[in-house]
View (cartoon, rainbow, N blue to C red):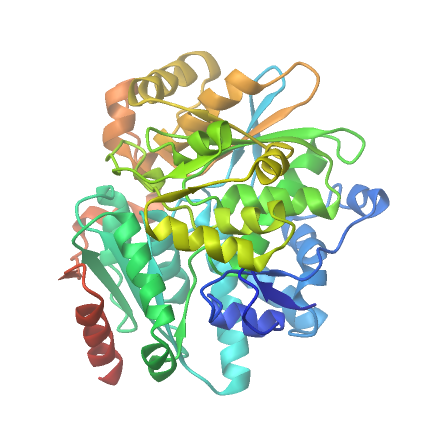
Length: 462
């Protein structure tokens, strides 16, 4: 199994090399050269298996010879041992033909745990075998950072620096990043919004001197291993509802396009997905693009669903790569145009995108109303991001095909918004009950590449 860059100018890599590199040296994102498929019989055989066994069977073809079967199985088992639900990703019925996929039973109460807990194990195993140490730098709109710090804290082979937009994450999200005491993790509050943090991260990867000096690695959803781990719960949930003998649709609240791109990969692997519906909040660039073909950035407006407050959706590049017939030069041209404010998707590529993706937009008032209504009529307390998904799903679901909405975070991660909508302030799980009593440790940093690189060099030299 080889991995190629979406911009076509970087060498093909193995799974291990692509995982440890993160971003390709030509600025592109790694994707598999070919997507392995599963037959109907192989998909049907997933029924009744544990989540860990489904994960092994779905991901194994992508890993190549990086890990033995025994080692890979052990790493998967370790990754999900700390989840708070035996099913790992349980389904809950909301309404006729509408189901909620609860992805918040991991250590940091968000879907990012499914990928990050596994990546932590994969990195440690690969780096220990190689006798190497890396510096992980990540950018987060809230959940990726806490999941990364939880997954990598205390590990011997990595130093972790997480950039998050100062004052633009929930208090729970911030405290999950700033309260760990391990010396190898660092929470950096950047002056700006998430797109600024993501841009500085990409700048670091494109500064090859810095990249090589600190052995830079990335665990944002630019890292293919992140996407791969998220493919699994599309299979586990669809099989629970009758796949492959029954089609299933998914609605995904997303800002960076990684979670729904994992659904696209599941579809390419052979999972009978009818529709993949992109759900956006008021920062609706993905909805606008799929509706009009114009991907034009604008101001990021802070919302009650802050993990979706994004205008530059990194993983959309992977979808564009396929939509443009895997033409790396075309994708590179679009990304150059994006730096100047945006681009227009060609008619052929737009048609290709629309064959797989639909979209919807939800306002702040509609998000609050959905939280309130879901509690009253469905008996489910939703986080604001999950509420965005449920509202769009209700607008798009049919009577013929089951709709699964991804619940991306526990409501306790966003207690102010949930309480405003429902009158209920969701408590943290018992294992996190003292989160607000723990001392915080973070560094405020300017939105400046040089200052960030200097700080990182100083910290890892100690």
